Length: 449
Image (tube, rainbow, N blue to C red; front, side, top):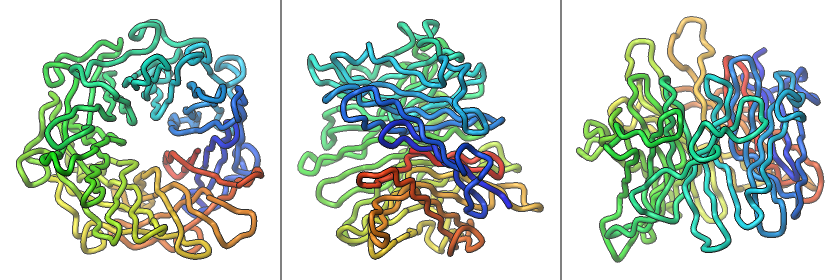
């Protein structure tokens, strides 16, 4: 029976292991499929895991933030062995913190990857108290967790140039096969019709800007056209295709008409791939058309193909506001040209509600593709991970939640109960357990928050 694992930050740093193909917790991981790790650096002990990566042998890295005092958050990273126990070869106790960086600032980590040398690359935002102006950052930690890597940027952290655009932050990161680092997030641009725009950067392995990427090391895109209805466009996810093209997804928030999924594809050199999206710009929007009009992107997965280096498109996930307080998991499947793949649910889109106890808020925070077939070479299923509000069980709040779909858009009923599985952590207080990241390796999945 295939299994998956889950990882979490709660009122400390927490990691839980869950079940994947069948939806059962993996009892060989940590404490019956769960691992809780506490930082408790100060403040109100509100520590969040926002990102995760897993090596091919099952070593887990979770990254996020610990609340160190009443007003400041700072980087927090934990590394776990494949059995879920802390890796004491990493920083002595499996945890990495740098609270000295945050005595008069906050450093929030939103994305993490493990590079080929075992170093931990992260992206996020640094906000000093002096001006409250967030900065887009990319950093790297030594493989042994002893310190930030002083061979990367200035003391292990860089602030990539965005052409002078300010109030910025990075939300996603991807590593190219050649060691270059691609990050994406937002920058305040004040274009006509725009407040914030997608911001994408590429750096060399030493942290310097890659001048071969759009001749500057960065690229900016916004859908804004009207000063009367300015947009907030924020990138939250990146996928690198097999041919090296970069697909960036996020949310385009328009005040009058709500928010849509937004997708941009860049060529290897950082220019816009005008063959993508069907309108000559290299960008497109996806609207789920629900009553309250808000479609929020959180994650993306590249749909690899054994028959084409470019792959067969991407799968984008997030949440869709159906009506009022009713939010469901949302997923859109695009083909290699950026068109909606109508083989998926007839429209290329669908939503999935957990609705535990009624119409509730369910948010997908991660998407991963897997192959569970013995005859098909490409991906066969889509796994979505996030959190679902449970109003049915007394004392419950939000639970970790997984679902699995086929590429025709149906829910895989062999997974969990009716294709869904939830995992309450319930350490006490409000029992709000927010899963923020999903990783699938083979037949195992980890979900963390």
